[in-house]
Length: 132
Image 1 (spheres, one colour):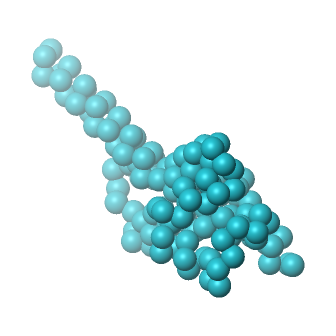
Image 2 (image 1 turned 120 degrees about the horizontal axis):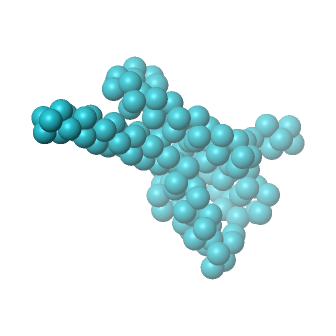
């Protein structure tokens, strides 16, 4: 029973995804490539938090009682997240699926958007200097 209380909540997964997004955005602004360990954290940190939350929620709802749900979710998360959301939330499960997929991809999306913004600003500065 102590394990269930130590599993992350959805709020924890949101905080991890926010931290990964902000750190990835800072790397994009600095135009510096992060170390390999940091890249692994950016790509897998939110995914692991979402998987741990799904394990906790599956234990609470009694859905998907397989022997090793964590490994199964790790291997098949793109398929399992929509299935789980539909199974537990019904027709409104698409909202949960969208939330979980956005948490998982938040670091990559924020890095990409900030990198494009930095490029656009640099191009605008270059263009204004060339035209003047």
